[in-house]
Image (cartoon, rainbow, N blue to C red; front, side, top):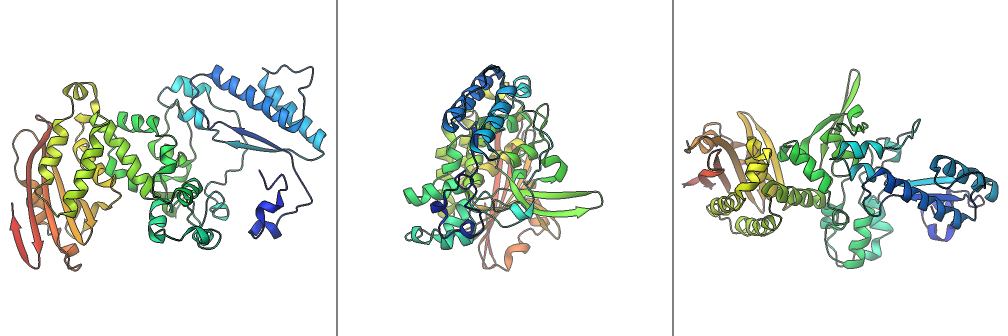
Length: 435
């Protein structure tokens, strides 16, 4: 906005200072749907009418006498025409959070459908490498422009917390996060806390999303650009809402495919924290559990994991199980386990490939390797989870690291809805202890 309005002083020393024609100024029409939640088309229309009125006041452009303010299409078209005529230059229209009214109602397709706009023939720059760094700060920006702000802050932690958004070009930081970090001098999920994605968490729960898959989803390019409110794929929704970004891409005959990932620690930890609250039906429980899990990992207390997770499943109300289908699918128990670790932002490898099969979950933390295998049984534990880790030599992949390795087999019962088997081994310096 400031660029188009010709406010050169704000760009002194930046790339735009010598690359922009400062003799030309453009009037800007700014439209934003970022504030509040709109629950109906009538509310949306009133918001649009108010936005257009405020733009007319700012730009000094009255509504033409023959047009009624509630005729939004004519009102908007008239605003653009009058603005160009009044200011002698083409109007620039900036629309922010245009999809928010849809996303806020995505679990109610009828309402979401009437919230759609009719824009077409647009040029989508989302995955154009030339514009990858357009909406964020690069590492170079942080180390140069923001160099005076870095004193006293861990540079690697800044990168881990807020960098990682990528659209086939240079990875960028979330600007909102960085500016608040520099002001407050503490690492917090600033962007995530501006609006916890209740709609997204509920939708993933309804679809019985296997949460360990969230950091490694695959999608075709055509899927990511789809926004069908009657059924928008989870991959597309997570990508378009900013909770997943591009990790790798490949081109095969007739299509381009992407592997998606969490952009950074903030999103991974915060999203899984929210998912845990949905998975257990009681928002207050996960926070205490996650904190205790961290203490157990630091203390290398493998045995302590069993009562921790047993207590977690035991606190879930029976009424919640009766009213939620998600607890009936096999991935539910592993999802709960995974999201606890993911909420700590740990280095997690899901379906970790080895020469003899895939490990359900590997966690690398403070010089320790944790290998987990999960099984769902009817009633009694069978000891198969730990035995599979042994038989397939899963630990061999990590022996060269020279770090202690913990093998953990966990068995869940559909009947009791809890852990019924928990066995582990600790491998260290060729010595093994079994429990």
